[in-house]
Length: 292
Image 1 (cartoon, rainbow, N blue to C red):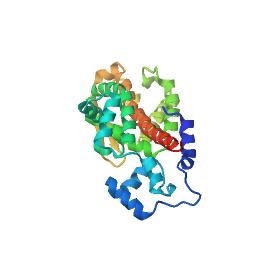
Image 2 (image 1 turned 60 degrees about the horizontal axis):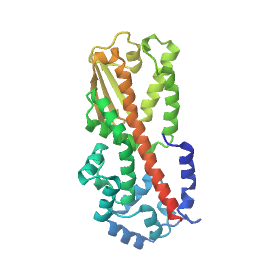
Image 3 (image 1 turned 90 degrees about the vertical axis):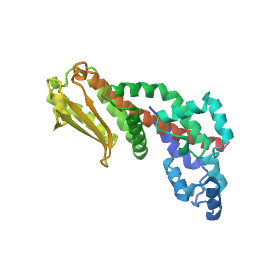
Image 4 (image 1 turned 180 degrees about the vertical axis):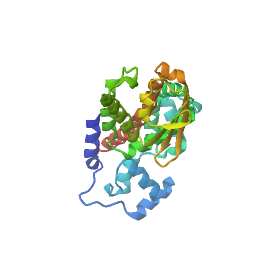
């Protein structure tokens, strides 16, 4: 996971790295509009981009300063150089991007694409292992990618999520070797349910569970002394849109595979957390380099 202290320092120092004047003033509107026309962006697209990196437009007094941080627009030459840097053919590049539900059309600047590729190359095997484990639940690669991308959005909105997840990971260790949740004391059962529910809430999803077609709570499920015969789970965005829908066979509970694979779903969240942090750190380093 990300180094929290480093990220905090990044957020505290980034305005100074961007040479923000004491009196905020955005670049002249006519110069800004000309630049946006050159790169084919609307002002709203620029603002959305800066918002992702938590950089106010008012931190730039000139278009030149803005260009330094945004980076170099992608062209055929620097794109080919990027393929070469990572030893990828065009097909391998597209396959790698697709593995994370991403594509070239999402990028305007080569530095951002480079940062994403660096992350994807390093996490490709881990992502594949996670998807393979989830496939045993009947979760497709497309569903995993959709879930991953949604979690990216959630992590970007919730800046305290990493600290909260790290805390829950520590608390979860108490139950790491648990073989039969139904044998827990009432106090431990409540603690376990609270950890799981808080983790679910951190990812801004709603989980609906049915046993033999009947809705049950997470606590009811954990208290069952016999494995449920027909367990179905649906994971929704808080807005109500379905993300993942799957069934868990009875034998998974008998071998505790269900618990292991449930943790694999959280791995998707951890990967998405790391991705967002990586992109921010790379932009932070670009800002530092721009000062040299």
